[in-house]
Length: 435
Image (cartoon, rainbow, N blue to C red):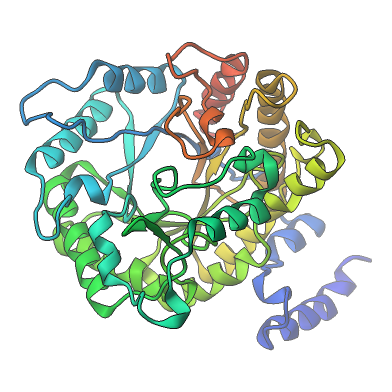
């Protein structure tokens, strides 16, 4: 009874803070904590493990035609994902593959992605498809680049930006150039990267049309669509304040072509105030988003902690002290409660960059520390996380910067790294119904 006398005043105080939207209480749902504190619920009760997801990079092979078999390497990637015990394969359907020229759609590319989807399903896994990435170069004409505030950056300016954001561990000490920057989240137009530019209204129509083509032709094989990727990232081409309009245009295209689906948006959680973007975007998008997700890489890919480690140990620090730093997951759960959304960690991982000290050994340490902490948090919070995604299945030698080439749990030749059995064990565990 001694505890119960505090219930009313505690609820009144928290309620007032939430009503008046006082940060950080505007993001907090106190009921799971109170239920456990007063013995109304047991820690971990009614919690299911998140579904294990692995990201794989596919891309339309030039010259591939409808009816051709999938390239052997692409089939092996799917086989390896199944062997890892993944339930879902997450991958991009690149805009530049689907619409290489303005208003010209590549039917063979659509057929290629259909073959990828059918093969994934034949291996008893399901796809999570990312749309709105891999911008074709012609799309640069759909931004207001002539305005003073929306100029493309020079190569020297973009190099300085990379060094400022990520230091030597990310940039590898090399100058960025337009070719290297042509990755999923960047747009190069007339030889220069487009960064944080304002779209013309006509861009949203183009995005809707592209999304419709995917949903109309492939929607019978897709349930989960991720709309864009890390659109809060500082080097995305789309200005932050216009992101909800871009996401909405992708949603509208999917809805026109598919009547049975759920949507995901993800934010890069390695930046200050990412949660403010999440809150703002969800306020704008409402029921157009079903799952709010984060990409978080404590110790490798998060400037919030990697920069500290690199300052102490240039340039080969392991980041080990940050592996169980999962405060962003608590904030994600708070945001999901506030907006009545499901939530996911759609990307996490650890780069075995050969410049670090035995990166493969630390990758296994990361998996155990991070995954244990994630499970601990969702049990304490009484929250069902929908997905837990590993980035990525195999090393990508075509990645634009050195650290990103080594996130695979497999080498590029698909041989396993030291940490492969550890991740496989965790994926098996995640496939269970209850923790």
